[in-house]
Image 1 (spheres, rainbow, N blue to C red):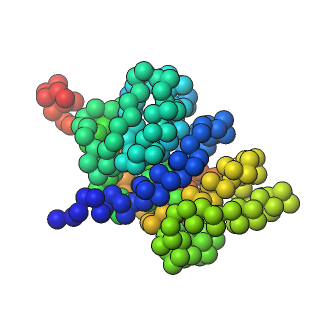
Image 2: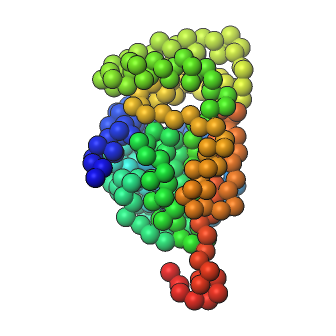
Image 3: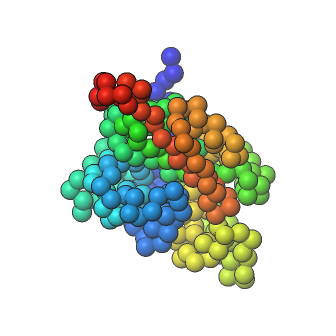
Length: 275
């Protein structure tokens, strides 16, 4: 039997909890990032929806849907530092609930119009198990969305930074990794100031303030697990979870946003059993 605590911890919630403790404030530029990660949905599409945010961190990806008019939301994570900042950032929304739950053991079934997970699934020990739980939490006819790292466009990360993360950074105390993140972030900052713009992603980075840029570099360095998936593997992951009408879009030429629909059972379509 798989040790649930070990499987949760393999996904680095403690290390991301450190990150969201250090970078827990909502920034205006986070909205532009969110719009890219959820490219399949216009602002108006959120109006009236119920949603589940799996691996919510400090709550920034639940904040924007609530401002767009979502009916209700639930945000879950397992690190208390993340949850504390999520509760603070989402306190203005009475219909928003922040609670502790594992992506592998979501206590919901047939409930939400949209279940999403942004920047989390690719850090898990067993992504298919978590995605199947997300599908179960969606109502029949509801949708599931994930944003994950792409292999395409990330060759430099896969060949240089990721081997360093595997060999060194993931074994170091996260506070020390945070210290080390200052140096590549400073180098990147200078290169961006000198006009480095090899992709749309770097155009975005060039508009960020230094603390935000450093948080992104730190985010790449800290996890124990990081998967970089080609498009076909993202499609396969969504299909194997039982989703249909799957759409996959490139985000900033370096990552994938994928959305699919949970099928409605035939007896439900025919007016039989209702959920």
